[in-house]
Image 1: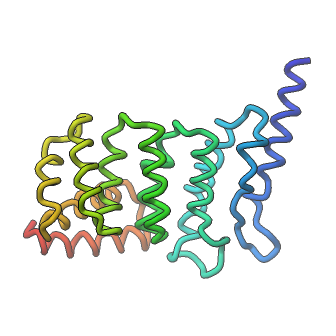
Image 2 (image 1 turned 90 degrees about the vertical axis):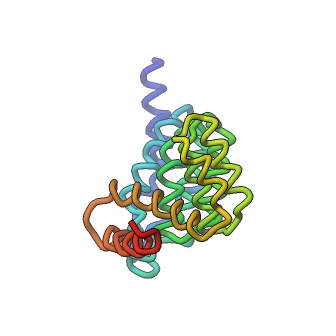
Length: 212
């Protein structure tokens, strides 16, 4: 009896999720309904995983690199926001999704908001603070907040150069160094394609600036 109830609940949860994974007749991808956190029937972790996988699968298509109008407005942020509401302790949507949201989609404020929520939910991961520093320094030009994030990252176990980098953020070289380290990490984990080519071009420009 209990097993049957769980199967029915899971089926209802997946039916609720259906509008996300299915395109409309025109091929447009829609963001998930914002009521998922109220209708998950106890399967919030499963739905959060599905949303994250869906983001990985479709985000390039929904970015400026994809076809114009392929997805609803701010599709990437909406998916990641819902995934992290369903599972606030799910690290990957913050850590990897936040950077992609900024670098690929150009949604810098959305990425900063996502990192802030990640830091509130998982405050012991130095990688979150480090990448939040990148967003705030390079994209939002908030030197003070970025430096604070780097110091906290160092306190939590990040390489000690993060502490010295924090003191250099007010210089052009410090800004370029933070940008290079973050983008190189992203480049090393990216498959071949136009986005990887674009990252390589940006890294080459930063290498010249830093005399690497």
